[in-house]
Amino acid sequence: MVLRTMVLLALAMAAPTPADWQPLFDGQTFAGWRGVGRDEIPAEHWVIEAGTIRKVASGAVPTAADGQPLEGGDIMTIATYENFELELEWKIAPGANSGIKYNVSEAMSTSSPPEHAALGFEYQILDDDRHPDAQVGPNRTAGGLYDLYAPTAGKRLKPVGEFNHTRIVFDGTHGEHWLNGVKVVAFDLESEDFAEKFKKSKYLSVPGFADKRKGHIVLQDHGDDVWFRNIRIRELPSRLMK
Image 1 (cartoon, one colour):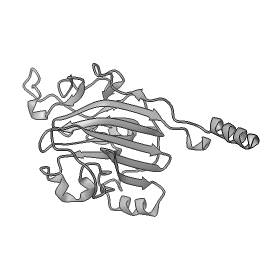
Image 2: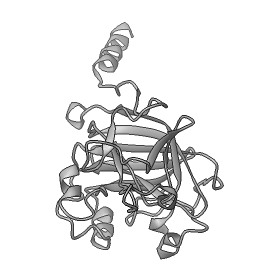
Image 3: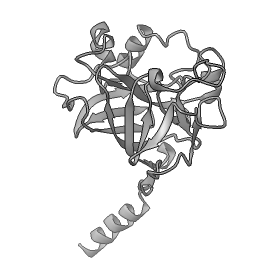
Image 4: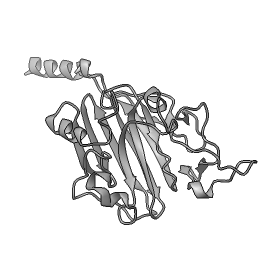
């Protein structure tokens, strides 16, 4: 009995464990973030507001001195992540559209227009009741893996104006989307199911899009008001260690 206990203890100590949670947003600054294809945050489009990162609706952004609109774009973490668990909260204005992107290659994203919009897997953020994208198909609705996987029918989306809780797990080839405590998407990059869905998606023509990589975490500028807060991440052990 003692020997068995010692063996189990040794195995537990040897097993790789997730790293500690690390905040990606300090609630006051854009430290650790920059624009996609930029060295800075797109001015006026993204602001810190009451402990949140707010994407200001493009129509409410001031114009430049010459009267031209200030250019917006997605923002991304400076650091890159391969296997991770990401948590954050978000809320949107009525009719809004946005997203959280991951597995993002900046080089791939900026190689073709629009150069400040990230290419990567996208956790869809949407007002399902008002935005027309929801009518295109269920894989365009909130919580889904955009244009690939629809969220389950039992998802719990809070009313517009209230904060939702998102959790994204990306571990090896396995991915999960969670919305307000409910797992709404699960996929595997090496599965036949993923291959079939990918063939029907808008991403089929993008070389290397579905390759697993150490990528940036991105908050999307879709031109609408959206707020993000309590953003944190923890890296998961390499699959080679498991």
